[in-house]
Structure formats: C-alpha cells, structure tokens
Amino acid sequence: MPTGEDILSGDFIEVCINTELGEDELHKFSYVEHIFKPAHQLFIETEITLTQNMSISFKSKSGRPYRIWMNYVLFHDADDDEEEEEEEEEEEEEDDIQFISIRKKH
Image (spheres, rainbow, N blue to C red):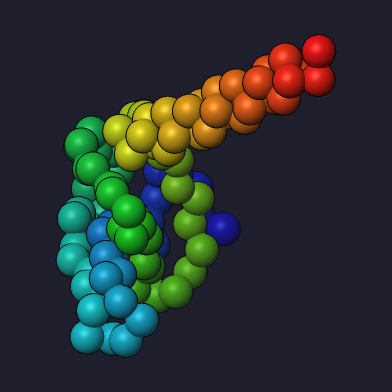
C-alpha cells in the first residue's frame, strides 16, 4: 500500500462532496473539491461544511487503496438543541404529573 507521501505515477485521488436529497439517482449529486496528483502537494487545509444528507469521499483513479488522514471539527447542530429542549420539557411535564399524583394520594 502506498504511504501518505506518494501517489503512484499516473494515478490521482479526488476528494468529492456528495449530497443525497432523495432515493433516486436524480437527487444525488457529487462534485470534486480537490485532486491530489503524484509529485504535488499532498496536504491541503480547507474548510468544508457538511450538513444533513452530505458526505465526503475519496476516489482513486486506479482504485488502489491509500491511507488518508483528516482532522475535523464537529460543530454542535442547532437542531439538536431544539430536540434536547423538547425532551427536557417532556421530562419536566412527567415530573409535574408524578408530583401532582403523589399530592393527591395524601
């Protein structure tokens, strides 16, 4: 397997961003973000934002396996906050109901 410092002559690696908006092929998109070539810079620093239904893939022209290292930052999604708040509200409502039922027993 090639190391992180060499891409075989005649080969290249595409970094692709994929989007799936539906089940059929008409709703699936892919575009090339960057291409790594032999004897070229093998390190890039870029900012890519992936949202729901998006993914990143790496494709070698020859199909040979390469090791790829990535550093990334996972940002907290605002939608997650809304779901957590709803769950907390439901838990509080359950607590209130339990409290009321306990008071009724006295």
